[in-house]
Length: 272
Image 1: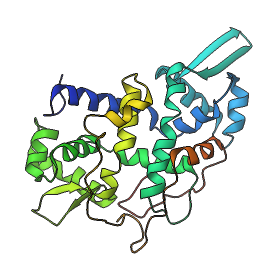
Image 2: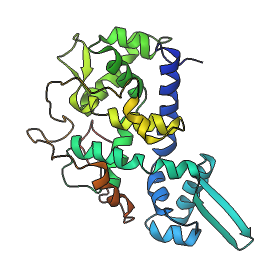
Image 3: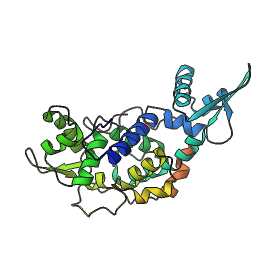
């Protein structure tokens, strides 16, 4: 069943990516997945790596990850239970540095953040309702009016419903517009999501990560756009040079408590 007015193959791809985001975005899911890296482990070993989480929360996250097919629970006997990655989770791990590399280039937090925090903040941006559908439609069609976007993104709803998620994407710095009544377009940051969406699409379709560069929507090299700062952060600051996915990959396997107890951004930005 179609969810958007995009071609069926594109709509199915978008749906898979949306389901993948919903699977990994819930808070602590990525941290617990990383805590499971390596051989299967007992619950106590996992809980020790994420010691800031209560036992009930660790149990809940593990159960949700098992239900999602990312973690396998093996009961050796009544007193010996271990948890480990499924093949699905193992192939997901290389996608995480891709997300971190995008955040390293385009997010401008008030203070330096570990890669795991950048991943969580990035995922939160993209799981806002209708966000991915709007971004994909703008990537395909280029500069587009709000009404035209609504016909594609939410064809069965009143077209004015497109504006709350659009305004949020503008506030988050993923979409640009010259003002009320003007068309919308991807910002530099939004257009830079190509590698991330390509990688997540390949993973959700069970394809090797090398297919990311061949994605029919996000694979071709992006058209250069007007530079713009990330408006949800302090203005007048250039993002630091991006590290490669390989460079940030080792940072992900650090299981310390979250770097900050408060949101990285002021109101209107990322919510953690």
